[in-house]
Image (cartoon, rainbow, N blue to C red; front, side, top):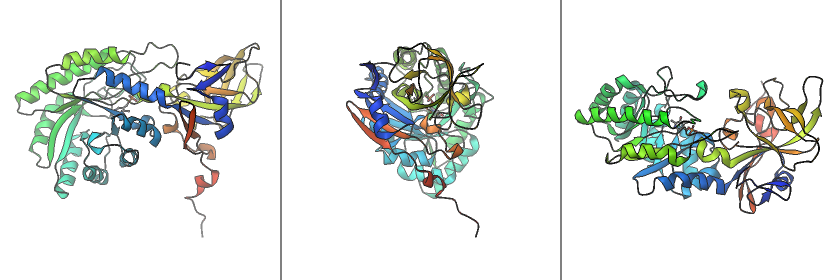
Length: 415
Ligand SMILES: *Cc1c(COP(=O)(O)O)cnc(C)c1O
């Protein structure tokens, strides 16, 4: 709970809207985002970057709902995309292609051609063969592709191994030791234009030190490039800044950025950032209803109508999300495992939660704005949840709930 999710008159709200109203109008399970929280998260970056030649490129894989993207686009944000699907989404939400960077290890020739035709800011190239392919695609279109090399600085982000990306053993980017020669090769390819360098060392980082470590390594490389006649326009430091889910001391945007900005002063480089989770994670909740209580000898289960297909993070990373009753009761709390209806023991949203709850109660799964809906699936033929954005005292349905018929509409029977 925070300023955007206040407890008022004994009821949890999103901005000025009681969550029970949203359940009544749109049903459960339902993702709810606070527009003000999204804007506040972006403003924290933009405030620290005021007066600095810079661009915040929201990594839209964290939450790619068009309404979310549109809020950020209206405030001048750019976008970090990883597929032509995300590029189409960003454009449909009003993004300026000149503010879009394209990351990802597996860009197809068709994706490259589409991105070139829209005039994106930069391709964040992740391998030497990708350079060759991009050069060929650009030649076929008689264009020059603007590129940056994603360099793997080999720093330990000290986060969950599944979301650590800047170590030698990760699949991302080119090895630090190879970067100079790959840049030199890129400089000889006629349909590429070298404009930048980028890195992204991992996700949910709670210590700003690895970011500074990565930047130091990139700056050393930039000096080598300069003495080899290769000059860059921008440096892209990726995303990865963590948020508070439980009691983590997530660094402020200021304490994250100030050491980096200090190292970059006088360099004449435009600064790009690719935050994902930090812009959306704490701006969203997943609203669910208790269907059954199953007290037992060993464990008490509360079966709710949201599941691992709606929010995969607990099952996938053993992630912890706060679970809050929408209308807290005064009765005695007991320990509950909050589980979904899916036929997997890994289908849980929280273990050992001390809650006073009854069948039919609404629960809010907090900090669900990032990698929530974006990673949802239709496992067990469960229609994906509705998404609602609250703006002050108004709530807007920004994605309606799927119907079951839609889930098999693309399938057919044998003749
Ligand atoms: C996932 C990703 C991001 C965003 O990461 P967060 O941890 O959500 O900030 C940024 N850049 C790249 C290249 C990514 O793959």
